[in-house]
Length: 506
Image 1 (cartoon, rainbow, N blue to C red):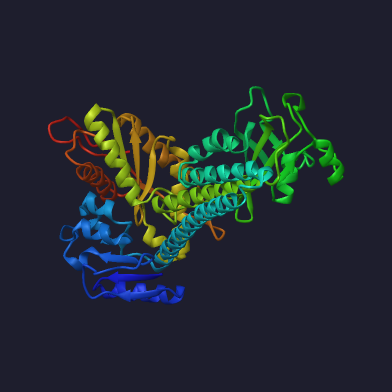
Image 2 (image 1 turned 30 degrees about the horizontal axis):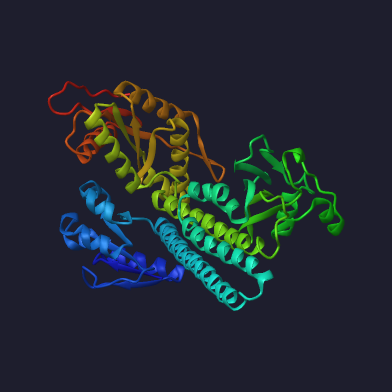
């Protein structure tokens, strides 16, 4: 993996060289744009100023390369076209501090590694599916050779049928939809071994409890199992051993293993045979799948039933891990690394969506633009770590103050933004005042000393603005007025053209 920078900004190039050298990451300075080709793991940093501004860049070229991070000056961020933002992977505002650049480069490198893991997992699933095909073909060949042996013919045909079912199920399970996988576990997998009942539990890693996700039992079964207490339950034994447990008969199993098995709800089952298989993600257990009561009333067969279940559960575990990795990649792509709030791109996407909804249905929509006062002085006097702590302090207060339906985001640098859905101007002003009050009462302590943190806020509501950019600019102008009038205050943006409005100062 390498980083490729397209820029003639000497300060920016030097900052990248220094950080990449410290992080031992390859950096290539590209002489021009567009690039002919780019490696699948490469990240391209495109300085829009190098090309004469955002309007000079074709979004299709950005989308073709895939991993492109746009670079723009903070004051020109609003000029970046929505289509260009959607095509890019992220937006980096300059000038950016070296510590923040280092943090973000690490995040991009981590995302690249996660994407590589996803590709490896995909190949592994394909290999397992191909392996199932090869096994089915091998069994089919064996069946052809052994057709004269009447006693073996029926068993071989069963194995062939099961392996063919595994092949079909593996393609269904190899997806990024968890509900599809859960449904397959309860409705499709039992058909593989002719089981009447199935239940799926996921392991809560923090509590160590197995939590019931879904089942097809006609009556109640345990919804939560504490593995520390139920050490001799069949599921606990499978988790401890990290391998499939086949019980043909409970009494025979207890005698052979010299354990006394805790078996609740025993009256609900017709037979004493079951299969308990842990779902593994590498060395980590993520859940348990239980299959019970073969419809023929016979015990589950070790030669016919176990191989397809073992292979299929390996596929299920790999697919669930695939989903976890995908969700983590999605989360990192939408989150600001320093504050853990939504990043600039996520904010633009969210505002565009709510803006279109307000246009179409006339729903209320308000916006707060928030600036941290005198952050540069904090950085100069106490160091950039204190400045980062101040940004994190503001982010936590924003998260605690807004509703779940609202979207707080880091807009860039020392500026934040909050999208307030279904919220009129009056309620938005109240929220802004509440933020100011909490900033006054919740003091930031850094290295044993108080760090003064105040906010300047611009607030306004949707007034029929023509574009999201126009909406942002109106509220950002109010923020500018708040800073011009001495900071540490709230100013309401005037209404848009053709409507009444006023500017109030808190």
